[in-house]
Length: 276
Image 1 (cartoon, rainbow, N blue to C red):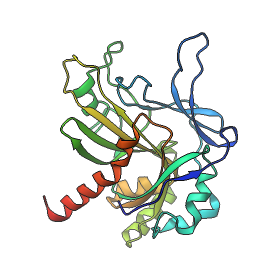
Image 2 (image 1 turned 135 degrees about the vertical axis):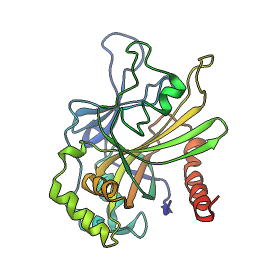
Image 3 (image 1 turned 180 degrees about the vertical axis):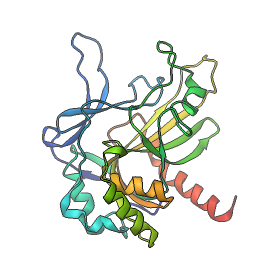
Image 4 (image 1 turned 45 degrees about the vertical axis):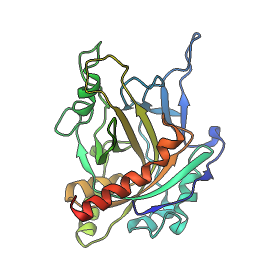
């Protein structure tokens, strides 16, 4: 954690927002359908189920084809921000989002690129240890996208926080020359800034299951800007700054859970500094 802003009202009416959160409408009766992140009117990601006992999830859908970079702030994001409000970045990206309460978090992260099913994959590792394999498919959940892991920590004796940065499009879509430009910049000490809209989902398996039972806090940052920067940082083993706009009205978490996030990051930073 570098800086924590104050919660603020951002966004435009939902029908006008380029990115919004929706509940899929079922054709006949029943409760709400899938939780979705929608970009430019198309479902981009399926999110964790409303039930709260199902496994944590982000799953890229076939219509996820757009990034949301803004040309007007690109130069300001080439380097680190001094604070969340630096350069009007929050207001610029806030205009892409549905009207609601957001908590700005300015983070310094060291991303690791994860390929589903390979070393470090949360869905075939920690998640399977808690929920087991999908009972129908006999396989782990599959996010249909590479993603980045950055930070994790115990919340308490019965909960663990996992942090993810999820690109809107896979790294293979990135322009190679731009990735290499950022690798070079980072090699000279530059720490560029990426921007994301974020959610916190707290999921816990139903009681009685023969699993390693604990709550999983999934803090997910969906990239609005910074796809090339994140890939470069992961390739070069360098840090990048992340301006996260945590959507307080979305996600599967109580307000007291969201309020604990800054302290959890600060505790880990202090522990690393002291070597404990």
